[in-house]
Image (cartoon, rainbow, N blue to C red; front, side, top):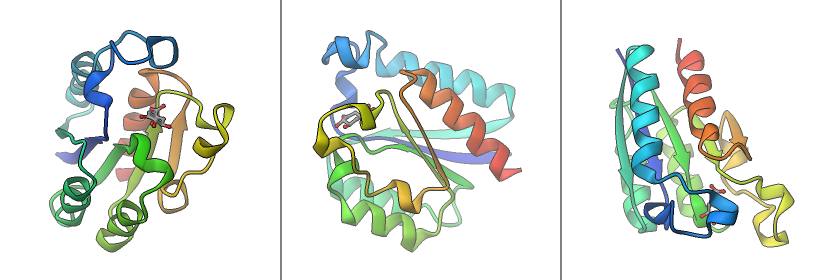
Amino acid sequence: MKKVLVIHGPNLNLLGKREPQIYGKTTLAQINRALENLAKKKKAKLTIRQSNLEGEIVSLIGESKNKYDGLLINPAGYTHTSVAIRDAILASGILTVEVHLSNIYSREEFRQKSLISPVAKGAVLGFGPGSYNLGLAALLDLID
Ligand code: DQA
């Protein structure tokens, strides 16, 4: 069975209430349920974590080697700032797919740079909660 670590970065625990005009009304629990349904169909096992703490995310990724076949991550605000999360992905060597609800390239200039994309296998963005499902499907295909 394929094992995937899913990490939701800062403020994503507030989805549904947080800037719904940008991020929609779907909650994180609903996104996780959809991911679990897809994983079940594809015979994969998910470990899902949300953290507002950069160091905690770095530790989760650092410990991911040999435990998981892939990482699905929405680094949220850390996308644009975190050398440490980027380095953790490189250090662990884990196959990574980056996802975003919004299209970061159509938003403020400071969001238009991802420090994570260059070290991810690929990225899915702009499809709202659908980005997660597309990202997980792509990651599971890559693991095959
Ligand atoms: C986000 C985009 C980021 O710029 C932002 O800081 C988030 C969410 C997205 O999923 O669209 O928190 O990663």
